[in-house]
Image (cartoon, rainbow, N blue to C red):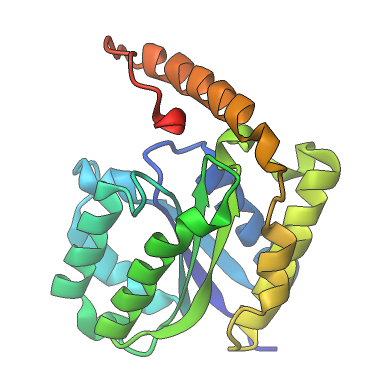
Amino acid sequence: MTQQKILLLNGSPRKKGTSFSFARTFKILAENQSHAGEIIHIIDYFNQKKDFSDIKKIIPQYDMIGLITPLYVDTLPYPVIWFLEELAWQASDLLRNKRFFALGQCGFPNVKLCEPLLESCRFFAEETEMKWLGGLGYGGGAIINGALLENLGKKGKKITHAFQIALDDLLADRKISFQVQELLTVNIPPILYTPLAAFLNYRAKQNAQKFGVKDLSRKFYLE
């Protein structure tokens, strides 16, 4: 198979979070098959640490683009929305006919929460005349909390196996198979939803405190 190059967009403001961990695994799997991958952080362009005009030099080098991002308030994080809008405005001619896929991950283990995010990505591909190869959702990204998949035992191996199947489809110019989503779907009994939500709220407050957030009264996962 001819070498293919994949540009992976990390949509999280966290450069070492779960979205990065997932993107890193895709990159490693591609390189294991003699393909090439590169990860860029959308937040660098949103914060103007990097010049957006550089993207127009980067895109032509790649055969495929993948967006790997967390879910924020039921949709894409604002920096990602901004980035996609800028791409559509400034680089639509470079995106035309490029293959595109997306992987959304949310804190709560209910993959249906990722559906609006993935639909937005599909719409973006349609509007820019890219070739949409499908989207995947993972529920439970907050529990992984940026850990490298090779350090997560059986769970990490299962996710990596799912990513490998998805990558095989993508490299063959096929839409991602339903089997991949089945492998990524975490089934948790409803009786555990409330204690899990309480744990995720506790974890979120810990992270917020690290960034100096003062108002910690809201309980996002229980609202």
